[in-house]
Image (cartoon, rainbow, N blue to C red; front, side, top):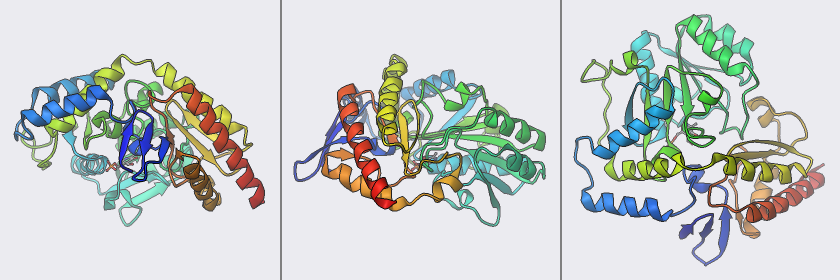
Length: 365
Ligand SMILES: Cc1ncc(COP(=O)(O)O)c(C=O)c1O
């Protein structure tokens, strides 16, 4: 790809595509929003790095804190991977426990604490009983969860599920980390978990809060965050953390988003979902995100996703590309909407995707 503006991107041969990948989620305002670009240019011209906090860093932190219940202190880092790594390390440090519990199919970056293995156990999403049985062993420093799964395709939590996880982690002395790298500031101005009345011990944010630049955040309870040096003894640092140019992009994006009507984004996504529903296949959506699964069955967890023939989605990706529509190449990535998409293009593009998907599915039977 060579350039992007609003909902459209262009490849090196000059072919245009409507983009529903949006950099894997960050570009909620669309490509090259002129206000964000101008802010980034000005920040770069003022000085790339200072090895000291900037005023914008404080402003951005204040905006995030004001929208996120329980976010008492935070640290900026450069990627979601770093944010989850430090949140997990800090959890182990504070609890004195070594083990982590995660959700099958949950993705938090590819460091080893996020991959099932010796000290990392997994339970299926939307199963309160399995989570309770594991957590009540009291072995786990933290349970890390995408409050709405976004990396298995989009799977919303069943009613009451997140509240159960909150209760069981409290009872077990396990810290609850809500990984809001995808969902934070995407479904409304704040973390998705707050719309379910859940307050985690630690949050991680990324993607949207960086406005398209490398920026992420971890933070939450003050008693945990104050264990980090220099107030405490836990080491955490990064040369590029809170990079002034990234912070400027994030601040500009959140200041714009604060005044946006997320209801419009919701209606656009509902339109996309209703068109996809015409295929007869399973569709899951929430404001700004939608997934199509090549099955007619319910999809509640990663086990359901794994049973689907993933080659069918790859075929849809190829057809979409030919038709000038850019969607993720994998079933396990959500499609994203931005405020720059129009109802007309969403209607046309998702009608096309629906027709293609039902044809691909029918021929596979
Ligand atoms: C929920 C979630 N957590 C963490 C990450 C890792 O973020 P990054 O790619 O910025 O390292 C991702 C990336 O897609 C993600 O979706």
